[in-house]
Length: 180
Image (cartoon, rainbow, N blue to C red; front, side, top):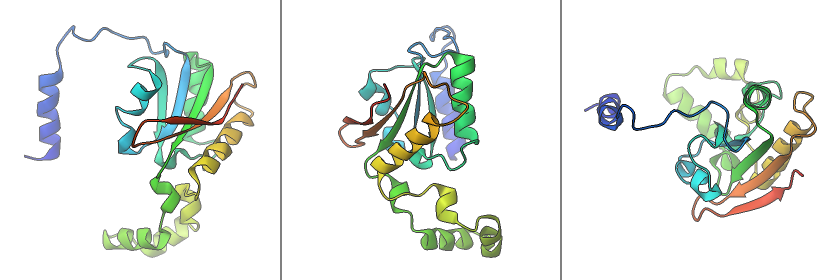
C-alpha cells in the first residue's frame, strides 16, 4: 500500500462527525511559537509547554531561522499579531538541530544525484548555506532570530519576543532570551 493510501485510510477511521468541538481561529493563550520542523518535536514540544490544540499559533521551518526578514515567517507573525490576537512570540530552537551541521557539498551531491542541475543551483542560490539558514550554534541562532523579530518595523514594540532551547530527548526548555 502506498503512503498516501495508508494516510487516507487512517483518516477515514479518525474522522468522527461531532467528536471534535469547533475551535476559534484565534489562539486561546494568545501567543505564537516559531520553531523547527524537526519530527522529534511533533506531539512533544506542545505537551512539554502545557499547551493543547487551539492554544497557540505554531509556525515551523528548517532550523527556526529567518533568512528573509520580509518573508513567510514574518508574514505569519504579522498575521498572528494583527489578525489573530497574538500578544507574545516564542522562538524555540532545539539541541542537536540538523541545520547546525549542514554539509553544503554533500547536499549539492544529493541534489545532483536526484536530477537537479548543479549550474541551476549555483546560479539561483549562490550561497546555499545562507539560503538554507544554516548555523553552527542553536542558542546563537535563537538569539539572532529573536533580534530579527524584535527589531522588525512590522512587530509592535509591546509584543515580548522570547527565545528558548528545547531538548528533543527529555523535553526540557531553557530560556535563552527573556522578552519582557
